[in-house]
Image (tube, rainbow, N blue to C red; front, side, top):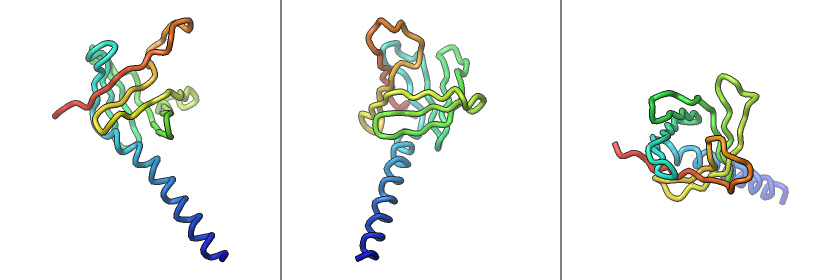
Length: 120
């Protein structure tokens, strides 16, 4: 009985780890903002790294990222203590919405940015 319980715990542990890895891998590629401001922001996901570029070509920052359920944790490579957790909703394998990356007025309702995968 103990052996069966240990095997079940091991299998559940593996599947729960794989789910987070799958979430991170599902976003691999280049995504472009479609709304609220089309083409303002480009996100480049590679493995567990994310580079965010503005439309003028400047890089906002490079992050390590981790997706768990409906949150994405962004940890700046150059300044890890400034970690940020945002809401994210993966719509399908080519689009997602994320809580506003840009400063907004606290009195306004939450804004979400829609990104679609760039076709190469």
